[in-house]
Amino acid sequence: MRGIVLVAGAVLWGLAAPGNGAAQQPKDPRVDSLASELRRLQARLDSVLRVTAQRQGPPAVAVTPSDTGAAQDELAALRAAAAAAAGGDTSRADTVALAQLAGKPRNLSQLNPELSVTADIRAYNRESGNDSFDPREFEFSFQSAVDPYSYTKIFVSVDGGEVEIEEGYIYRAGLPGRVRADIGKFRQPLGELNRWHLHAVPETEYPLALTTYTGEDGLGGTGVSLYWVAPITGALGTHEVYAQVARVAEDVWLAGSGRPSLLLHLNNFWQITPATYLQIGGTGLYGTNPDSGLRATLGGLDVRWTWRPPARALYREWTIRSELYAVKRERAGSGETRYGGYVGTTYKFDRRWSAAVRYDYVEAAEGPLTVTRQLVPTLTFLQSEFMRLRLQYQYAWSTITSPSHELSLQVLWAIGPHRDEIF
Image (tube, rainbow, N blue to C red; front, side, top):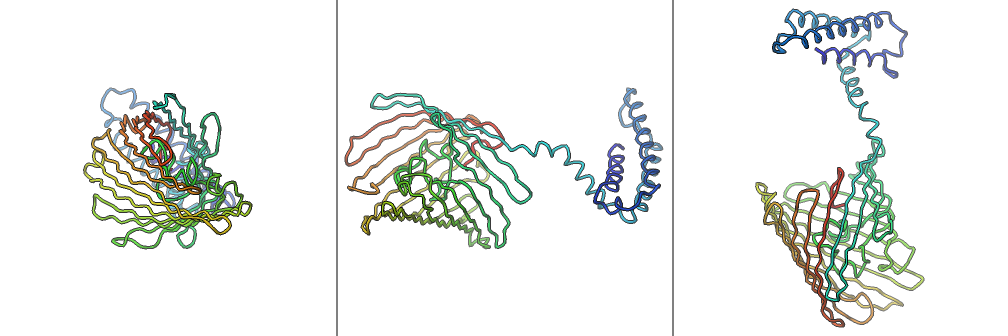
């Protein structure tokens, strides 16, 4: 009964709302009469509800069929009179008015961005004896719709007492040609893992080749990004293209150049079986620094294979991924091509437990040819979707240094609607 009265109220609200065709016409005495009739029905409903509350019997006998039938007849007459006063059908006005009324209580909260916080704490035991606890990072995520057309994401990182805008960009999808456009500061799609935030990678750090060639925090920049999905579906797979022009934030890639770099990334995805999929991507990166006569070129190839049985996806998953980089840094027209990359695998053998191992190989980007290798096994315990613990051992050796050992424990937890998201 109350729902019927509310529908009738929504009709009258739609008739009286600014911008409604009926509301723009001269005031009709019949509208006042309809409003008075609505108030009478509301008073009658309140009286019935009070009587129902005083009775001890089941709610089904609270309203008699005669009362219900009479109220429905009166409401039907009221709706017919409202339609006559509006000069047309009110069914669409009912829908619009109800949608507006239902949305009003949420509008104020929607003005606030969604806030999430991710914490990353480490404990180290090193062969050198330099043991320590490290509050590696606290990341604050702000996400919100800007308007009906655009969305924004802002990630503020507190690392070692320093506050930094890790990412802050606005994007709009649905542009002509199936294009999405981003502008701001963002992590770039160099391979697969560079796009991920540090707390989301399978190990506690980014692959060694990635940090050696682009910087400790990977490749990120401020600029413009265009994203396009090819109109291909089914057995032919899914194919994505990223084209970006951005000034790289790290000094390693272009050594302090203020000029933007150009990046092109092609990602291809195939669903082989219901339980397995294959992903292959290719990346090209180019930039210059006229002040130092540097011209840098980087090519990348990334491959990922994942097995995840649909019926046991919470308990079993196996992923093998690899990335290979070739970088050439030319000065005064001369320079050598150096190579680096990694291969790793992660296996989830229980709902809460997973194990992984990664092998890194990297050649120095410039100067004398030195090679560094690294073996990184990890064991991860997922306490819940909000918290996980990771034990990691790292063994590294190179052509110019002695082998090193490191044991670390990582504790990650997150709060908010976007808990520990990849990016």
